[in-house]
Image (cartoon, rainbow, N blue to C red; front, side):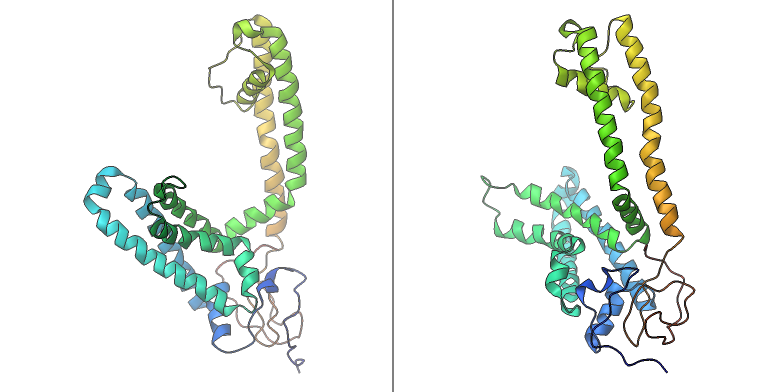
Length: 301
């Protein structure tokens, strides 16, 4: 027999941030929460797909509206569509706040801020159309492109990449510090070797050249003229090919390790615990039978 459901959902050791917003215990808020925040139900899958389509369509409208010829011909339609998208995203944002037990936590989270940025520019452009000295309305209109960041909430691959980058941040920081030391030293050497007569007018300018050379970009606005300088340039370009592979390997290895321990968004209907493995049949907290898992997508540990 399963144990009685606790008054509050326990903290999931696999995903300690999963219940941070507070999952409702029953009623319409629980049903709405299941549709909006979970992805292993048919309704949740359709909700995510529809929202992704709306996000892409709204970003396409903003981009098309920035073209002068299209704006002159279809400006009224673009404005009507923009207000329609804004109304839908506003309703979605309010629904998210309404179905969680801690709405302030969600409002201050990364995805909560992105949801707010998706609707705020349209209202600000309406409220301050004449304050040109403080803000340009066109900038507010361009800020609507931030809606594309809402896609990260509905694609497990984005979340997996974000988790891998977060876990690798110390290694990447050490790598960037190493690259910074190399370009600083090599830039200083090139300042001494080439000098102001060949375009290396200062150490910061020489460091800029070292960065463009090491990243194999090579804009060509500053080029060495001496034989020794060209030899140093050749060494830095070859070194750049090797260093570019380092962060890729760090992040890839982290993503591979996390993919092996992927979990789903499926939650127990008895105790509301989240974060079960795809092959799990019973809840790891209370032992109740779990609902069948639809093979849709998984969330990284």
